[in-house]
Length: 206
Length: 206
DNA sequence: CTTGTTTACGTACAGCCTGTATGTAAAAGT
DNA sequence: ACTTTTACATACAGGCTGTACGTAAACAAG
Image 1 (cartoon, rainbow over the protein chains, first blue to last red):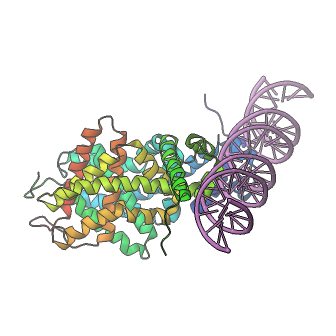
Image 2: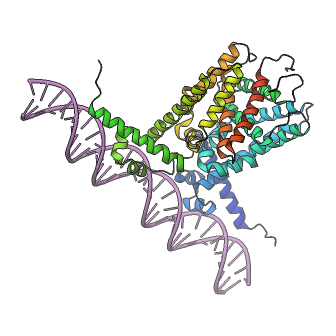
Image 3: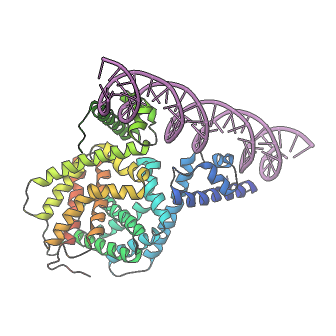
């Protein structure tokens, strides 16, 4: 049975969003461990009671923050993937470019790439990764394997290794003095890596 | 002027090593955040006073643990690199195989790949990485660029992206139900990626 | 060998931070 | 109008880290 949105729900959602937004900026600046719940709720204009009513514990608030950031990233990447390109590999690369652009925000790097694995634990992190970034890569890899662009090989590890390279590229770019140039460097390298995975026309395969 | 090793030094080094060893197993089992200093010192048979005499804080003990694990990994990889191979790329791959074997120990994965980035922070982690794993990859990449096996391209990001893929491979292998098969899958993929980075004889380059 | 000093470690304490239990006012149901 | 539920505030307890201080053994000096 459908429940109509009541004033409680609106108020609740509002504070929830504010907590997530505040936590996002604070966690991005100083990391999960160095930001206490008291500072979060004070900045958000509520008390710890509100936080522990909305979220089971600090880690669950962090999880919500990670999901928000990941959602934003996936949105930007899918937007970049929307514009049609000729080469399917070129498509993947423009997706990678959008990913690196989204990670230019150091918040992304710190929250998603540094703290998330440690805070969420391997299982939850793996699960989240599959629902967002890894999911996109898996999809792309799957199409490239299906249309014969890539030589037949297991899709799961391929997607993970590509994502690993992409994540490291994000770290590299976010710390680079010239992010634009660093982005292009990384994309060229990734392009080369992808070339090696294509169905070899004349190249030697072991 | 040289100072001779005294009984103090021996005793000090002994407790230091025991603390590192105990912390290594405990951090590997339950992670940095979930292991208190009290449990560490009790298992090691000392008190917290000894810990805080040997290390400035808990993070510095953790740093020592990470260095120990990294040292071990580098030793195994360099051992694998010692046996001569024909193809220089083949050499890199056998190094990667040794790396994945060393990371089969879940302790490695949890300490070095999950907790270390969050606990040490980006700067110290980057620095440690360069002194150990990343250093090896950089060296390998440098030789492959120098002897013309790889097409000319910036070495620093290339090494980092390769290490990123290798680290992700380590996670994949350490979580796989059949680590041996997973290792070979990953090595095949990495081999393909490396092929794409070679000086293209007939392959198309953008 | 005795004495002063340093080293390595044990003990006790204080602060912080998380999570929980309880209270309260407004909104929702009846 | 009355009860119940929701959303949040307040107060409290436990744990954990880091530090200040105490102590006994080892080294150095005479």
